[in-house]
Each structure stands twice: as C-alpha cells, then as structure tokens.
Length: 399
Ligand code: FEO
Image 1 (spheres, rainbow, N blue to C red):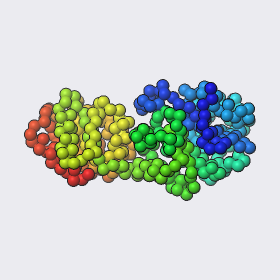
Image 2 (cartoon, rainbow, N blue to C red; image 1 turned 180 degrees about the vertical axis):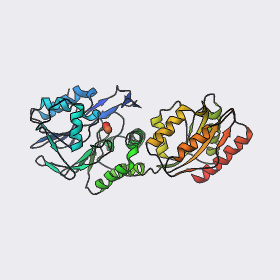
Image 3 (cartoon, rainbow, N blue to C red; image 1 turned 30 degrees about the horizontal axis):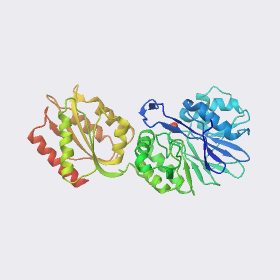
Image 4 (cartoon, rainbow, N blue to C red; image 1 turned 180 degrees about the horizontal axis):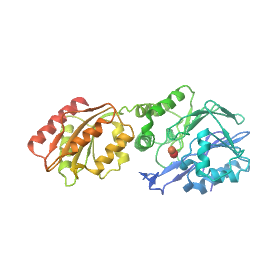
C-alpha cells in the first residue's frame, strides 16, 4: 500500500523507512533505523528528488508510481550519488524511458560507475545557479562538494522556497509517521542522532558545510527537505545554528566528557573518582564512557558536543589500548579541533599510553592540554588521587 505524505501542495514525500538495518554504511549502529527521503514534485513536468536505498525498493517504487497516478516521470534530480539514495537510478531509467537525469557533471560520471546503463541522451548536467522550470515550480541548483561526496549539489525550489539539502541537515532514525520537525520532540528524541549523524558522516568537512551555510544564508528558505530524518518547516535558525557550531568545531556545551579504557577496573576507578570530584565542585554536565563498550560513533558525537575531554587509558603491547587508539584516530579523521583536554595513563611496568595520547591529541588543531599526564601504576594510590583532585579543580575552573 502506498505510504506518502504531502510536504505542501503538489510536493509529496515518497520516501521509506528501514528499521531492519543494523549498521548504516555497514559501520554505524542505528537502533532507531533510518529513513530514505525522496520527494516528488507534480507540475506541468514531474520531478523526483533522488531515489532511495535498495532495501526499501518495493515501498519506494510503489509510492512513486501511485503518486504519479499514471503520469510519466520527466526528471530525476540526483543531488547525491551515495547508494543509499542512488541505488535505483538504473531501474528508473529503464522503467521511465522518457525520464532525464539532472545532476552535476561529477554525479553523472558516478552514475556510469555505479550503474550499467546507457546514459546517451538521458542526462542534463547542471552547474551552479542553473535552473530547471517545471511549470509553477522552478528548481535552482547549488553545488555542495564534499557534503558529503564531491558530486553533491542541493536544489532550491523557488516557488515554495524549499531547500532539498541532500545529506545536510539529516539524521539517523526512521520517521514515526510524524514527518516534520514541529510534529516531533526534536531535542528529546532526535538531537543526539542528528549530531551523531552529522559528526560521523559529514564532520570532517566543516569548511565545505560552512560554504553551504553561506549559500543558504542568501536564500529565502521556508522548508528544508533532507535525505534522512525530519523535514524542517519551522525554527530553521535552531538547525542552522547547530550546523554552524558543528562545522566550526565549536563545542555546543561547556561540559566534561571522560573517555576511559580499562581492562580490570583500575583506570575506570580513576575516571569515576575524577567524575565524582567534578560533581562535588558543581559541574553538572559530566559524562563518563568506557570506550570498549560505547560505539565510537557515539563517542565522536560527545567529543563534538563537549568543551572538555579527558582521556584515560592503560598501556597495551607497549602502545595504546586499541579502543582508545581507535577513538583518537577517528577524532583526527573527522577533524575535531578546538577543545581542552587532559590525559590519565596507566602502566604497570612501562607506561606509554600518555605519551601516545598526547602525540595524537597534538595532531589536532587548537587543542589545549591541561597539566602533565597523570600516571597510575597499576592501581590508584593517594598521590595520584591528589593529582586527580588538582585536575578536577583545573577542569572546574576552565569549564
Ligand atoms: Fe545519505 Fe551520503 O548518503
């Protein structure tokens, strides 16, 4: 059965949800699933904004077919060529023989790479500010390279003032029937997943996101239609503000997160003691994560959120504990910067973790490391507990 909703008159959400997929990109846990958003514009000409993932092929195709109600599909606008949105381009080209694909030059090149289809006479390549008239609706295209792949563009519909924003402004999480931001409790139910989505998928490309935000600032936008998660039709400044902060690598909150690795509980003991001391000093936003337990994508989201980060790790194989190394490597890959950090190491005979963590942190931009590394020899003793108290003072003063 067709399952669609109107975004506004003659623009219909024809996307679908996947609640079975465990790992997005076979990498990121998505316990709340994910939506693949696609939008159909019905005018003198019909235009579909992106396709969807192959996993929702049946529902998606039915949605498009039924909404077209026998009309031909004239255009498929391809804003982004990652397969979670482009998997069905080949099928659509075969099913709608008059349909033309409208995309950037790079995207058209990628269509040929991903799909075994004859594109001769089937594509219209567009560049910055090009327009496509559909009747009452007109689409204007803006290039958005690296948000999140190089071929990405966003499409602005000038009549309804809708920005079809590709991956930008998206979120993990299947849509619960409620499609619009004003139909959900975004702060309570969506913000964490939106942050985890942004920081892990697009976080590396802050400058490119800033470029898109500049273009968006020059447009009169009433609605933002992303490829994942809720559609925004109110309070756009809230969302744009979050993106501005995330893409400038500014912390959202003055807060402390303690990331620890611990084989037998001794390094955890230091992390917990530091957390207690911080709470005693009145710091209320303190989070403590075991990096072996919590998925690294959630740790990354917290690192983007918080102003102060503490890393506590044992030495392992004369190096750094693997899960901690993975977190720090991911932080570097995603360009995290502009944070205050502190280091706690543990080593029973030849502590190395502190030196390695310091080196890895110093590779990030604008990281201030508080104090000398605190070194624990096997288990926490009073002198190190005193050092932790000193670190808690400094963190509390800095937060
Ligand atoms: Fe949702 Fe970069 O694809």
